[in-house]
Image (cartoon, rainbow, N blue to C red):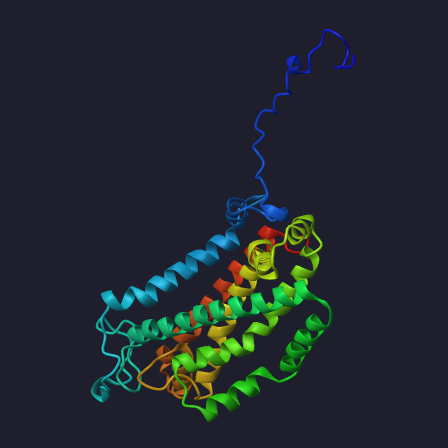
Length: 316
């Protein structure tokens, strides 16, 4: 019977009740992007339960951050004055991980080195993400000749071996933390820009972008209000991997003797110095920095993979 027949009011027809156990669906953000609540829930939950990779990665990063930033407040050591009288001591109650060739406590050195490594990694990720995302978003939105020229700039810079260019620049200037952050940022934004541009190319034809443009919204507003929020998945994943890459790059420079100058410490310098004593049996100078460096990089990669899978970027 049709609801339009006389004597029957459509308002009298009861709505179907939801099935037992059914949950309210998350309302997607503008343009079909997952809401922040849905993204956070998807990061920690998977179809089979808790996302173990995300939990392990974030838990490990939290522990390492507390170790590097809170640890020195609880375990105070002198990382400035050279103490040759206590150099190369094995692990003991007074020095849980022993001392190095300069008499520095290795455990305290790990904390100081980790703080420098994490500060550099997050600083490079922020600078790289902001500039690269804006560059790629504007290139993808404008299109045409401007887009082609902007992409040729990226292709030209990508053709130059990054490590070789970094070594040349570090040799030309006195290395310090801010200089290395700037140099790594200049070399790392290229990949972010290409990823964001590819995402914007698929978003700029969506109805909400077309509607905003027809209503008179400028390109800046379209990028900041509509395109970048809907490309947030790609941006976060790229930023997470950039942190790990920056920490590895600093360790590589330090291993080659071009890292932070003394008395600053980082894990790469500790690893490079410790290798000289490995065959003398001083294992505590090599294994602690190597293990914590590997664990940190793997933890950030686990977080990046978990975010990638939770947002299903391949189908977004």
